[in-house]
Image (tube, rainbow, N blue to C red; front, top):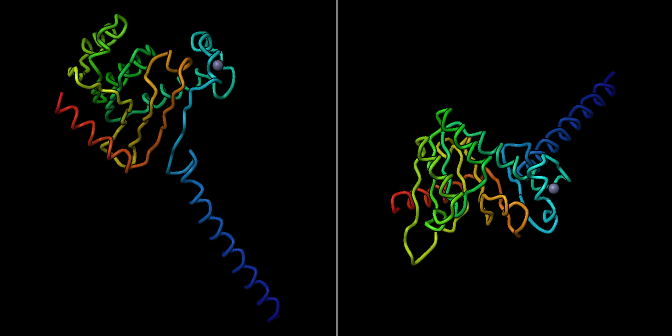
Amino acid sequence: MLPQILIISISSVSILIIYMIKKKYKKTLNQFTEDGKFYHQLISVDMKNFNCKPHLFEDNLCNKWCSLSYKKTLQKFISSANLSICLCVYMLTLQSLNYELLMAHKRGVIIRVITDKGMIQTKPVKAHLKKLKENGIPYKMQLSQQSMMHHKFCLIDKENKELAKMFFGSLNLTSQGLHSNFDNIILTNNLNIIERFSEEFEELWNLF
Ligand SMILES: [Zn+2]
């Protein structure tokens, strides 16, 4: 009887140890996946996307790197906002993203947009900004001739550590940016990065 109890005890302890090691390993892995508490995703626009222009308009996904999938990811990201959106981007002409901003605004999400004077020089951009303003979404722009407001980042729900997330990189929010340029952005919920970009946003919002 005694050896049986001993075997059962040793087996139980072994299973427990394996479970704890697996749990710890899984936690470490989750820091680098979309499934856990920590999140990051890279959107890279490159030669794989150079034939994707029609896919954006035909709703036709050519593969998992298709520009259409990137556009949908960005739409989903913006539409997930509960509290606030702070968008700081040199160029914004993607109609679908403008639509998501307007929808979020209607849901009561506080939206602020910062851009550059360069945007206002083209008709479509002018029309987009006009629409935002007409709907009560405030925007500010860098007017200085000395420098450009060349950032491309967007903070979502930055006030709440559990919900906060953002994207940043080189991609302008235009359809050309999604299929014709070499560009990238990273989507993440890393709080250190979010805090740094939040400071930058508030500084620019007060400055312009
Ligand atoms: Zn495609």
